[in-house]
Image 1 (cartoon, rainbow, N blue to C red):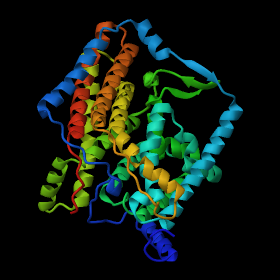
Image 2 (image 1 turned 90 degrees about the horizontal axis):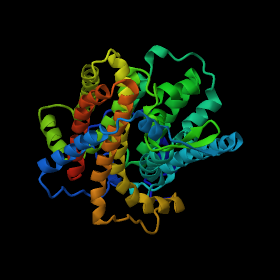
Image 3 (image 1 turned 135 degrees about the vertical axis):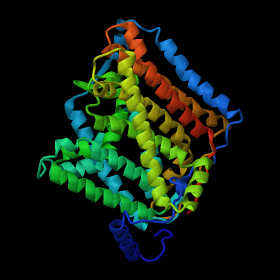
Image 4 (image 1 turned 180 degrees about the vertical axis):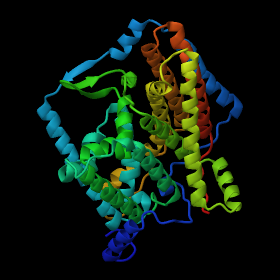
Length: 466
């Protein structure tokens, strides 16, 4: 079957060996998109300083425009608008069961095709399903339509079957910090290993993640594990909040996009604040490591004797700390600007959901063209899961498509400014107080905007092999 190297038995042995050594060190850092990387992006043709200041100015101007919307009844009407679509609980229950079975079937297909499918990444169904179908395609579905992952999630399905009650209680004092560490660890593994180029390595990662996740659900209970620990479940739960569709009391409920981000206590605790900031940072880091500037800095750091893995890990952690620190300072300044007695921790929880549209905009900017380019290869591999398809096609997007990433980044930041504006009027009684409270957040968002725009303006290059 396929063009695999060696017998099926040897490949299964390699899969088990890779799974056992999943987190073993490697001296090679390869591009996280690997053999599936999209076409090289050309740099913009206007002066960079003008491009960045214009983008930052757009965000600042959007704040000035939103500050004219001070009628609380108008804000309540916009964010409270709902259309309910009655759907029986029986239909939703059966839909969830079918989606769960489908998720388990796809998980099994990923593992099987990682062993028995072609070794060529652009022809291997497991690689295409995970990177193009799941992380690019399904993620876009979640923040555009709703958190369908909660129903599809194969690990949640297996965890509920094997360990719904759990053997012991989850330690509440730990909170969501394991999901923060898990998200950073997954992104680091994605970057420093050829997981998008080697189907067997990808299969070992999937098997390893399955073992850890299902075991955790058995020990602590599926509900507790997926509510606190599992980073994938949490990131999709937060992305789903941006979507206009969700399950309501009598079926499905449609609201304006991002309207539910102003719900009080949506984020509860500084650990969840850190996770939202981590989402924003890892989407930024995902693009940062593909820039020529990063490649040059990495070579310089490695020449100083720093191991490549440590360089990538250090940058990941330091960048997260920087983004979290900037947001923390902005939240403290919100309290001062508004002359409020509300605790900084409460304000940081209230305003951090406004960062999610920024992460969504950057994800869409980074992955829409990637998904469309690889969609023909994914469809071809579905027809030929265990052999190289007769024709391997990659969609070529038109030249004008290159302007969309910039638009997505700016739209995400504009929505973020509006969400912060509506949140301010929820928490502060006076109009001037609500407007002044947003000054520090707008400054932080301008910083995030300019960083994101700088990344999307740079050409994409493979990570250096060190």
